Length: 226
Image (cartoon, rainbow, N blue to C red; front, side, top):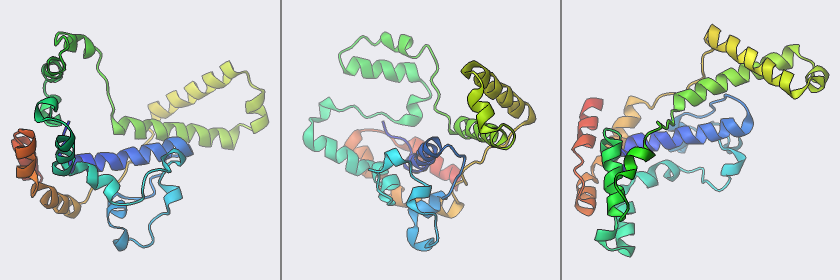
């Protein structure tokens, strides 16, 4: 599945941040997208330990982490070096999300499976929304800060787990009611978007030839972005 390469690259940035926050138990955002992409421009950027989860130790602190997977001409070319063209199915993410059932059915049929299973598989909506994560993390961080300030550790440890769970839920409810603001990652700058768009758009024709896809939706996205 191929997603607009600029959107995909930024999405990987968000995943790295979410992993770090889950691992560290904080809502900190210690690097911008640009600080990951252009290390030479930001010599004082936060160190690796402040941006990568410990379980992501295998990931390189390198711009290629965000960009290489979005080079679909390279990726598709590698697949087609090892598999016959009729054994590879390419799908455009932007078209898939418009009609998930239809596209999933076509994939099942391609695999020799029952295409009618697509409706069953998509009956329950699945979401992977980054804004939900950052909002939830902000709420959890405020609960942790409150407990640290007002609930002595010995009191917390002495409470039965069921009481602690109720306390957490009560504090989360208060946070939601008072509108705790999430610490959102900085948006990609206009200049970065333009630079990445120019970089990736130069490969669109190669991608179309390799995959048989029509990348008009990507070109329309690029035009809207200016």
